[in-house]
Every structure is written in structure tokens, then in C-alpha cells.
Image (cartoon, rainbow, N blue to C red):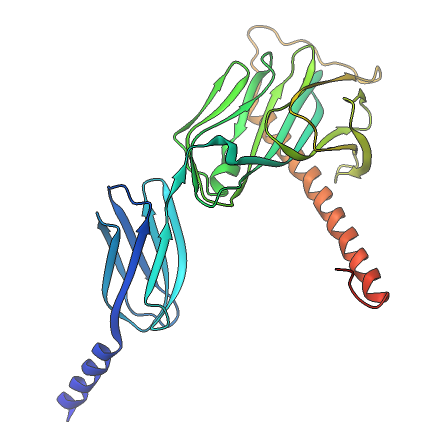
Length: 316
């Protein structure tokens, strides 16, 4: 009797097992790695590497699974349910046209640092193509910028894969980058400006904001208008200026340090700037500013929605 039950169970398992097909579009040779990870009710697991654009997964049992497909620098993650899903098509096609990269917004954050100014820029890129972008990503910065440091963690967390970041005179170059279609990714970097503070717009951009402490007096480029003021958790008030659809080019702004702020002693040649500490502080400060800004905008939107509901419906 026990043998009969085991045979029946084995038969049911076979009946519940089937084939699952993965088709890779844009395949140009090389290894494709497929990892199938069982979820709550899945019992099948697979981790294979093949060289083919059509991959057959045999004897996959009914249940839910995570599917991770890696091809070169590209990664695709999805979930499937067997037997409802019997196939999956993944488009790994790519373009090397940098014109598909657009900037949705730029936050140009001017702050006081080491007795002078520091600039923190957060540039939010979007791959507007329906395929992967593969190539260099170049962002211009002032040629006299010094101590430039890029926050690589934000790129990696956004799904951007690249070989390295190269810093050249007047350029940040993300070498051999791969960006999934439709992906938004931030490029955040810090530098100390030269005698002239410049904002370089080298990609089409919807919105550009200049954010600076209220204690600093600046003369912004033409086209920027006051938008709001925000206060961080330390009680420092920041002014926010905004420009929309600014033409590509180089824009200069004048800034003055208040006389009541005493400059620290000038460092000697045997003293070194603790750049990682400065970068960390600047990134945290920028994050706080942007978080407060985002929160305020969200609150305003919720208030507007509430007002619309009181009026008796939505305006679409």
C-alpha cells in the first residue's frame, strides 16, 4: 500500500511538472545565466549558464518563482507562476546613442565649506529609450573644479552597471555604462569651485533648482525665480530658486560669504583635507535638503487632493 502511495505521489508530481521557455531578444552570443528561485509554494530550483537565445527549463513544478536572467552587464528580474506562465520574452537590445539620456531635474546645492564654497550637484538622468543604453555617460563640470568626488552608491542602487568613473579636466565620465530602459538614476557629486561659480547645463532638462543657505547672498543667472524656503533638522534655512526648460549652456552666479562668518586658518602644505568626511557631510546635507523638499511637495499635493475632494470630485 505504501509503495502504491509513493508511486501515485510521484505520478502527480510528474503531471504537475512542465517546461518553461525563455527567449532572449538582442542576443549576440556569449553566456546567459538563469536563476530560478522558488517562492512560497514553489519547489523547483535552477541555476544554469547557457549560450543560446532560447532556453528551455524542463520539469518545473507548479508554484511561484523569482526569475533572474543575467546577460553581460544586463540583469532582468521578474516573477512567474506555473502553470499560468509557460514562457518569458526578455529584450536585451541596446543603443549607444547618448541622445536617449535626458535630465529630468538638477539640484545645484551651494554651501559653505573650508572657508569658501562647495558645490553639490544631484543630476537625475532618465534613459528615455525602450532598450538598454550602453556606452559612456559624460557630465561636464567647471574646468577649475577641485577635489571632485562622485557618490557611486546612488548609481549602483539605481541599477546602473559600469566599469569605472574617470575624472578629467571639466568632465565626469562613467565608462562603459549599462542603463535599463526607462530607468531614472541620480548622479551626485561634490567639488570645490574656482573663482567663478558655474552651473553647466549640457543635457535637456525640465527643471533646475539652485539651493543655498539663506546666510549666503547670491545673484542667480537669468531665468531663476524664488520658489520656496526650506529648513533642515539643524534649523538652517535654505532658499530654493527654480528655472524650467533652461537652454543648454554655462551659467555663472555670484555669491558672497557674510562678513560675520570667520574663515578658518588656511591649511599648510603638511595638512590634508579630509575629503571623505567632507563628501559624507555634503551628501548627508544634500539628502536632508532634498528629503525635506520632497516631503513638503508631497504634503502640498495631499492638501490639494483634499481640497478637490471637498469640492466634489477630481479635475482630470
